[in-house]
Amino acid sequence: MAGLKHGGGSDREYPYAIEFDSNNNIYVAGDFISPSINFNPDGSDVQNSHGDYDIFLSKYNADGSYSWTKTWGGAGYDDNYWSGALHIDANDRIYMTGVFEDSVDFDPGPGIVLRTAPSAGSYFTDVFLTAFNTSGEFQWVKTFGSVDGYDEGAGITSHGNDLYLTGYIEKSVNFNPDGISSLYTSIGSYPGYLIKYSYPVVHSSPTYSPGNDPEQAQIPFSDKGNVKGGVLSPTKDSNTGDQRVTVQIEPETLKFN
Image (cartoon, rainbow, N blue to C red; front, side, top):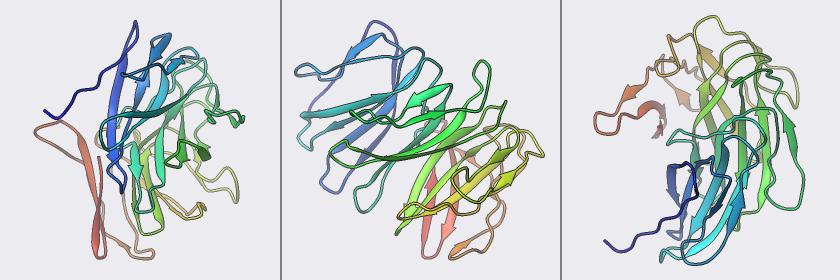
C-alpha cells in the first residue's frame, strides 16, 4: 500500500465515486450527514452540513496530499450515491450529478447560485448537473425535475465535446427549463432518460422509455449525430453489484455506472 487517507465526523459519510484528471490528481465525491467534518487528513478543513445529507467533492494531489474540498446542500435531502455520478472529461472539466430537495446554493464559494426543486414533500427530489474546474471553482449548474416525484441523475460520461447524462424520472419532467420546453411524461415505472449536451453546455433533446424500477429502466437511443443503438438494459456487475448501461458511440463505447 502506497498510502492511506481517512477522515470523518460524528455521523455518516459515504464516498461513492472516484476519478482522475490528466495529471493523475484524485477526486472523490460522496455525501455526508455529520454536522461537521474535517476533510483534510493532514491538517484542518472543516465543512458543516446544512441539514440532511449534503454533498462533497474532494481533491487530492497525485502524491496523495490533500488539496481542497467543496460541499453544498440545503435543509433537505441532497445526494449523489451512484458511482457514475462523477466524471472528468479529456479537458479536465469536472462534472457531478445527483439529486436535491428544497432550495440549494450550488456555488460552494462566495457566490450564490440558488436553485429550488419544484418537488414538494419528503424525499421528492430533482436532478442537478454541475461543473467545476480543477481548482474547485464552481462553473455552472443545471436542474430539472417533476412537481411531485423522485427524479434522479445517476451517470455522466463524455465523448469529445459532448456530455451525456443518464438517470430516471417518476412523473412529468421538463428536461430543458432554461429554454424551449422539452416536456416528457412518464408512461411507466421510473423510466430512464439520456440527455446529450454540447460544450459550452447547451440542452439537447432527451429520449427515454418505460422501465420496471430504477435499477431496470431501459434507455432507447436514436440515430442522432454519431449515437447509435437500440433499447439497452442495464447489467449488474457480479463483483460490485453496480448497474451499468453501455452506449455504442462510433468509434467508442460509453459506459454509465
